[in-house]
Image (tube, rainbow, N blue to C red; front, top):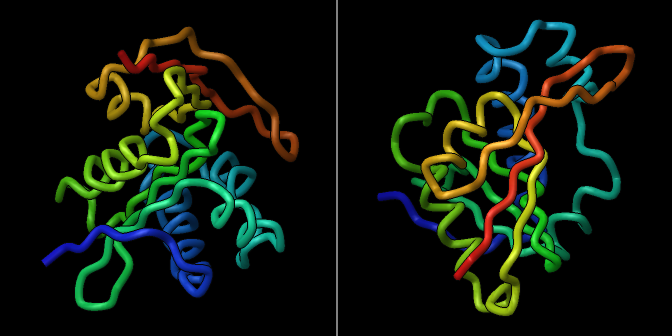
Length: 155
């Protein structure tokens, strides 16, 4: 059974492994290998990740003590992370961690959300009521990555 719970600092290595796999494997049909390496260049989490996730509203999905995915939203409404392990895609995990994060009481006063969405996450976010945005390009490590600066307004 899949369980949704808040992020704990000791989840960091597993969360980062999900991030790496989602970017390096899961996004393969949308991005070249060079683009994916620029997006996720480090094999280990950046030192600031623990605080970045711990300071935000962050939920993880787990099953049998294995993490499957996670979502993180800052207190000012920026959807920072939404990733699912490639082997777990198609099980509704994105929706569950997203719903838990966006409906967390700590964000009850936030009415406007933003994200720099990937080609992959854009499809999911459109289904959640986010507004579409023209494709933009950001550069990381000499690679151009397409992104969408999407918004969501809670009524």
